[in-house]
Length: 204
Image (cartoon, rainbow, N blue to C red):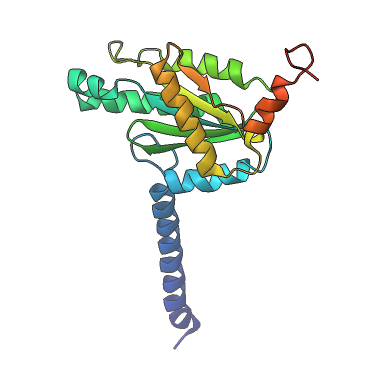
């Protein structure tokens, strides 16, 4: 038996394992991505969000498409899918490489980004206007998107689920108001300190 005959089965086996490994990696990567929007799924988003929350400048944002059922009922599910895909793309573009975006399910999205220049309120006001633009190629398919957000530093020691809950409460407050963006209320300690700042009534 020559050397080639001995080496060939090992070479074939090694190639097969390499192909299988590449296939497994692709399957895993696909499983972590939402098939419609390409955003991270809940579990994949959570892992990345927790890493970002180690930075005190982190901001947690929830976004929910307003009147989404009405869009589906009026224009069809294909139009609704186009709206979700456009919303996802706009969120991802706004966050860039400095954050992470996930689709939590349905028409709800979650974002964590680092507010390095402390301009989150202005950035999110701009984002709300961008999200309200008509969908490219389907100008009749558009709606507003309600945003609720919270700074991690405002609620020291709270984990991602707590911050998402606060952002969720703020988001639904935005839906009930005339504003598309609402910030979560400060923690009791911070609110107390803010109330005692010089120049305010009752300052020490």
